[in-house]
Length: 373
Image (tube, rainbow, N blue to C red):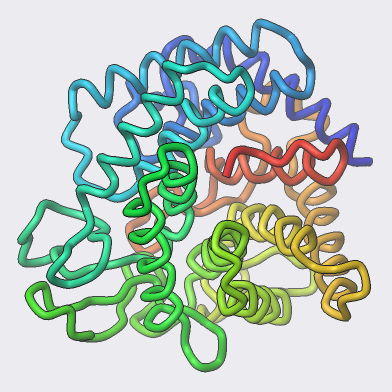
């Protein structure tokens, strides 16, 4: 079953290469990526690069390798331009592009580019407050004290840079951000805030908020998904069992709040009625995160069974009910992702990150290809 889904997905990536050229997909609009490509200026551009590298690892077809290599050159130029990257998503961008190339090909230039990207991310560490600022420039009155849960997936870039260069500061920043996220973004019932604010001068906590969730204090499902996968990755790099426990608790909350078909709505607190939007991308992220968690568990660990069952139910549902298998002209791999429901921006369409994590999960469960985190 998984192999059929992989083959269908990789064939779509192959066709999309011809359609996209040097453009980067972001989110679908009316069921199309190709009409809304960008020149590598979105936070999501790395996911397309990652899909090309995954397809190359699966097929060993050089056409994927050549296309992926061209994206890395684009990321090199983006870093040279500096491109007003006033956000923390440098990990999403360079982990799946240049770091992937380094892991696959041992390419020294790709390694150095990735280290430079990690240094760029460290530039968003706010020493006074003790956090990585998510959005906006230093001192921004609206965004200057804000962290968001998505940042957990940017931290592997810093852990890797520390291992690669021997410079402890990279890992120190990553571990401090993960701990701050554990303390302030994860609530007592194992649900999560999307964002949290701190005083820019003192680092004193101000309070939780949302940017894309249903309301302040609700649990945005994609944010919960970032927590499941992100804390598992911080455990992998640090060995801090509190990160592993947090990931498992967030996974249990996610799985126990799913509807009957085991694929998430866009927020766990939104009133469910006819037409309520799903977010297949949140469930795809969690599937990849559950595979990471399963890898961390000893064979006899009692948590293995519910993790395995949750993974199988969600991934099977994505494959059988949400994937575009048998739709050869479809540009996306998963239907019914949501970008920003509150902002009415692609509330029900393809999401390139959903496609990436879906492909990563399939390749990990079927072939042992893990991705690049």
